[in-house]
Length: 271
Length: 261
Image 1 (cartoon, chains in turn green, red):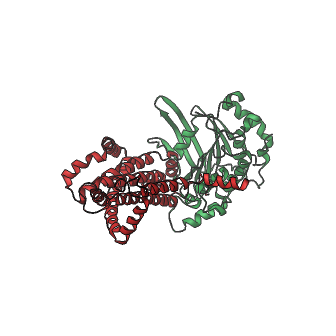
Image 2 (image 1 turned 120 degrees about the vertical axis):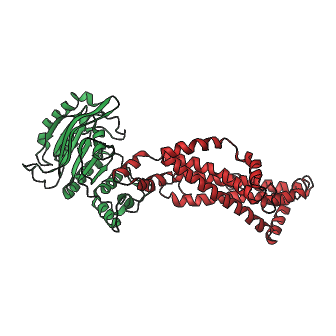
């Protein structure tokens, strides 16, 4: 049994309301191809305000392409794609500018006189108030990722995109980051789309888990059980998701080429 | 005895010892007449001449002339190099327009242009400055252009995802990312500029370090020639120290690979 599923220690939010909140993301029949290669094929996706969605999928399933479109990095002309203009991304590699001190990285692109104050407040929220003036290359992996989180949240985004943000961190740091992300999400309530390889991470954090395969959503699970009490439901859910993901766990072994070798061992393989 | 051995060890490992020995041998050879004065002046007479030239103001006067040639030529050359590299590095069209020409021109040794520059600009200050300017364009251009193209695309992308405009991306990401390369180019340009100065000043100069050297050659004053060589070396060292000082300030964000001793 994975510790994460019953680890979180905060009073959980109310269950998902009966009537759906207005969508912040709306994709209809979204498709994308590179030359002959169809990456995403007729995808429909809605994400409600303040909803936490986890997106699972093997490499090559199209999740990165989907995320880049939602982030506005790849234009999608003449397609039915609605995303909020205020959005922010946390990448797997923190992607801080090494020549700017930590607080300037967080304040990047902010306008106005109080940009430093806002950056400071955001950094204090991720418990890095003492590293304001540090150079990014002196940070640890976990610290860098927290700065990246602060840089995303300081913009008060309506949509927060997390691209495997924890996969390069060690197991303990990853747990702390999960807690932190949930805290921040509860406080700021952006809609979150988190791309991950880790089934348990998805189950532990999300309101809704999607599985993407060959450019289509092949499974969807809504989780209403409060976070921290998901240990009981995890087992059945996990095997359901895993079977959709790869049929058997053997197929998953070949999944993560993009994951750095520093990750000790993928949790889902050890289950 | 251990003490004695450590003393020997210290002497053996000292880097200044061999140059000092060389100087002493040179001085002795000159005094004994093994090296005639007209072949190479003794270190002591070089120092005497140096002091003389400093006190008479002769050295400073000519050094200032040479210094301005380098400064002016470098300013022009580096500015042109930076502008060309920015245009070629930041836009596809600029690359197509500029890069092939520069690559062709790069194959011509700048010194080979001296006769042409004399025909064009005469034998005054202009060809000297022009030669220095011309030669110092390339290192700056090549390094800065390469640096701009080598900036991590993922950083540019992340800046774009936060809604930074193209101009802001250039200012916050691309230019700082290319700065280390620019400084490498600047260092090359500085040493090439001094090299060009030496050659340019051999052509009909009426002031400057090269003029001093030419004059001394006519009177077989090897002591003055050596003084001028020392000054050239000092100029090179100074230029290097300048760029290193700039690097220390501008690239403070880079972790020190070698711990400060």
